[in-house]
Image 1 (cartoon, rainbow, N blue to C red):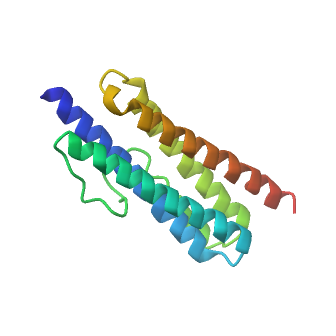
Image 2: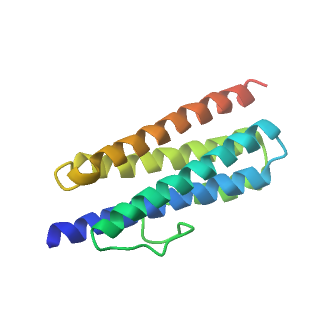
Length: 152
């Protein structure tokens, strides 16, 4: 029973960080007039929405649920997606991309913590690993874009 509560807490934390990312990407997409970046950001909004649904499905299998739809400021480790909102006041591509990089790194840390406890998360380890790898790929793409716009 105690393990199940830990699983529920971990999955809720992942839902929260995923929703922070979704919200951050949405804010980034709304803040830019750059068509290339807007398309990339919206692609990751959709991906995060899929991740959210997958996590909530596993949460339900363990008897839990999450009302979280937008992330939040309190409760989760590394709520760094909030940095995006600050970067948006600058509206430069590199500032926004830099904030996204920070948020993605925080999400990877949270996933790595859950994956490290592979016994506890054995029934959904493949899902967590797949989502973690997707976040890592997004991070790579964003870092390439960040470098591209720094070089301009």
